[in-house]
Length: 394
Image (tube, rainbow, N blue to C red):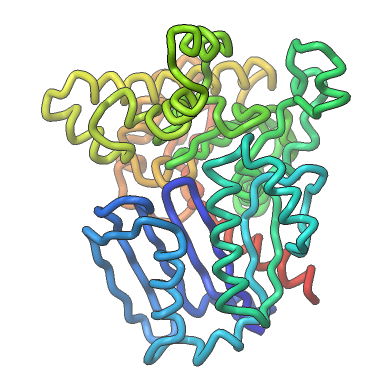
């Protein structure tokens, strides 16, 4: 049975086609910088080892990226001769009112996602677009959503609630939801399975969208994300934490609600501070070339990661493992070095050579005598989604 997993990020698309239940990957692809005329597309056919990479592409929306991948998947030499071979498509969906866990994407579930469009516009909008595209081109495939909030339902209410009128929680559900559940739960599974590690961990998912998660004995007990995906550390385009009174103050000065939301969701974060790019690689290059705002953006990004890691360490009563995952977490040795250096007071000692080594799977990057183990765990959210999708339609 062929199951396709579509992972729709805030600025990216990732695809993997699995043969289930063998879990063999048949092909994979990635689109970076979706919504730009400088997008990057990479494709790999796992059956024969062929692949390609192209940059500088004009990919204005998610539908364009999906069609680019499907053309390769079903093209000459591709692992599928046609769309009808795909039994199901699994999605790393984010938020739906009243739905947690894994659900087939019925009209009711899709409507529940639309109800939270205001809360998660950078995610529910793209997912609804992607789901509609797959419904159109694969009418025979079943569509399954694995929602991101499920892993964080173990967070104690004392940490999940805000200091708002209690009826806002009762009537409107205002609380810390938590996201990146597929990534953080995979980190917890990997710590237990590969390293035999339970205890206290902070998982740092750093990419176009960023969050930290406090994990105790494999369970989420706190997260930097809040009710929406706007909070926590700064992101590629989103501001992260902000005093809520800043918005009505800006509106009192003449900005509209739409202008405020545009600034918070699309013109903030690394892009807003640096004025260069929402891609950390380009921001770091500009910083190294002497761009003061780019340097400020990198400094702020690192400081906010350290702030949350320190707060979660205090809540956990100490730290056993610090884990980096996501596009930045896996590939930016400099960010890892700076974060670990700032946390050296915990007894964390970095192995500089291991940290600087090219990405080579899950690995320890702390020195042998370090009291806190630092690790890199490449994200593999897609495999978990493939498993849950297979179980759901099975």
